[in-house]
Image (cartoon, rainbow, N blue to C red; front, side, top):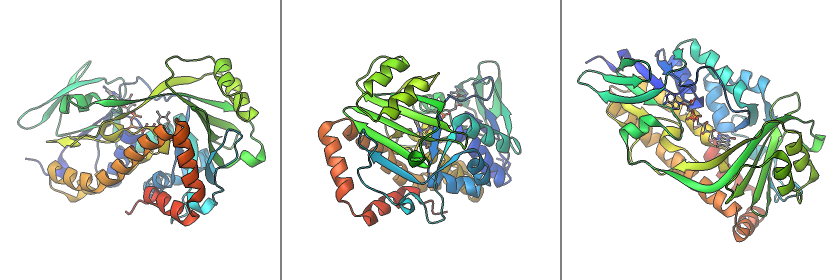
Length: 378
Ligand SMILES: Cc1cc2nc3c(=O)[nH]c(=O)nc-3n(C[C@H](O)[C@H](O)[C@H](O)COP(=O)(O)OP(=O)(O)OC[C@H]3O[C@@H](n4cnc5c(N)ncnc54)[C@H](O)[C@@H]3O)c2cc1C
């Protein structure tokens, strides 16, 4: 049996988690191969908020300056009424971790490119490789792609919410529908100065609209959520839904050329994230609804800890035992709270309860709650 550090590692999925894991392994001097189904590097035309915990990890991996230079710093994250008036005035230190990291909004494609370039320094990355299934043999794992079969010692599934690696490992695993649908877009839209460097999520009746800048050239990312929606809408129809909101909301929607529509689902809790030499990471292991803006952040944290424990342990059983022990509590907290938060936000009474709690909670209590999510004690 080869020592764990001499075993070859194959990662299925070249998304945020897969590429960050390749980078974190590379930092430990461990090469790996990433297999991505897409024929080239591409991401949906949307932005993403990388919160302080994600930025802390990306800093450890040497990527913070690039992310900062290509994204937009968000000083405050605010939940507001439809007129964009915050339910509670938050100070900017509440959105900052103890190292001074703040949330950064960035274009997903730009983030993907930064991760890809860094990962390519130590990992082989193959595109157009569609994983189908794998089988454990006596000495190795056989991985079947659409066009070839390869052998590997260790297999990591970073293939997202609808992971096929997970289906092979745990066929009983199920996704969960929140019944909420989401529209997303990016648009060049100069924001007035009072909206710059802020992430806003505005709540109306069964509707949410969030936005922020994602670079220094007036590029704005936005998302809109509605519960119970079955069908996509044109930009004009969607803008119409938000006619009671601050007019800038409909203006942003109407100015957007390409709008993406999709469901907000998560994954029912898995009992285990691995079996033998096959492990799951990121959304494949613990997809969450995006109501706390933490899905990618958790995949990024996985990458750091998995590489850390891999380098310290003797076999995958030990690696995953330490990894799951470290990661479970935080991931469960985020998946559960995000789910509850999303449900309350689309219910009149739920909104009232949440906004009252926000208003009445002292800033020190809210800060403590944020710190729970933002802290990476590494
Ligand atoms: C509307 C919305 C908004 C969000 N906003 C935020 C946010 O602001 N902040 C945040 O932190 N998170 C956010 N998230 C969550 C975040 O997008 C995900 O958690 C993150 O993308 C997960 O990364 P991943 O690499 O684990 O999975 P994915 O991004 O799903 O990547 C999986 C990769 O695997 C590849 N793949 C899949 N199947 C195969 C196969 N069979 N063979 C080979 N390759 C395969 C895919 O092509 C893809 O490249 C949001 C999610 C949604 C839906």
